[in-house]
Image (cartoon, rainbow, N blue to C red):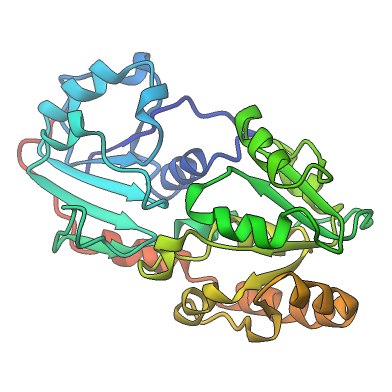
Length: 312
């Protein structure tokens, strides 16, 4: 069959952006597919059996008109999504009568995207890539990196805010995010945690906290990339107790590492070495022995059929 993989930004070998990782893996699994990640690679008149669109920021795409034209001239589409907050661009969705979802989250019944053509694929599991060499741990306390998401604000305040009895280290994804974290805790220490050396950077920290958006308490999303990144970097993970249903469904035991407030973080950190030793073995054994991403993708691809209209 003829597949096109559409990524809204150009692929780079060292990129740790989730959409790039997904696109690169799909190209490996479907080597005969056409990769469309720049204007020169997009022939709007060409037809395919399926166009696989990787969720990403369409606003940053510099060949939007070509992608829109391509979608108008094709019939069947697959949306590969790892983040429920990234929706199909409206300019593209109105072109799609035959749409299948391959997503790392349940479909939201209230956002108008319910479809019978849905397969669960835990794209985030691609992030699990244990470092061959683990640098020595330099920083204790609690480390956090990423965007300042509104749905996590009260958890940021609880675990990273001013007055906690442990050091806080933060890497923000932008200057506006950094300012928000700074207002939350002026004593926090900021560090650079950007690609391509994210895993090596966070591996210098002993501990991190896993929290999720409030919406995720009701809408299942697979464990986030930061879970797999922390395990890959041998960073001890504490989990806000509201995350338990997510990991129960993912069949990953986290009960021993749950916390419900900064005081419980302080208590867990007192026993950090002992807990981390157990956690390391539990998580690594689980992820090494039951890595089921390929079976997820195989099941998603099962049943796809060519269309007579696809032609070179």
